[in-house]
Amino acid sequence: MPYIPQTDRKRFEAGLEVLAKEIISTGISNGDLNYIITTLANFYIAKHGTSYNTLSDVIKAFECAKLEFYRRKVAPYEDEKIRQNGDVY
Image 1 (cartoon, helix red, strand yellow):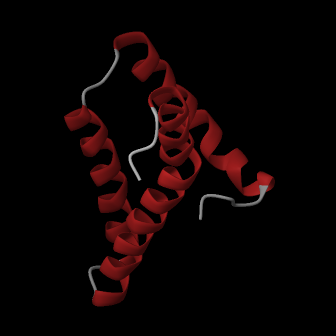
Image 2 (tube, helix red, strand yellow):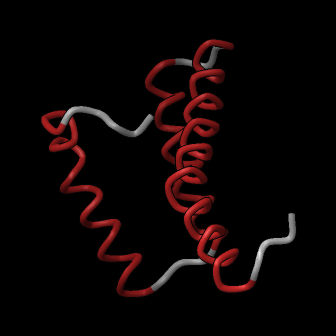
């Protein structure tokens, strides 16, 4: 779940702003996005050590981020396309 307290978010803002400016100014591919996500996961593993628990933490974060992204971004997009083009069910 990405909903960490606002106070905790502040420590990431500067780094995310640098990354966001680069992404907005030059654009990125899906491979670039995969690289960024994988690199962050590798930093997490380097900090916490390679263990089943740590690797499981990364998988859980990926899966929960995927599900929340689907719920908040993809499902509303699909609903709009249903309204525009008609339902198939």
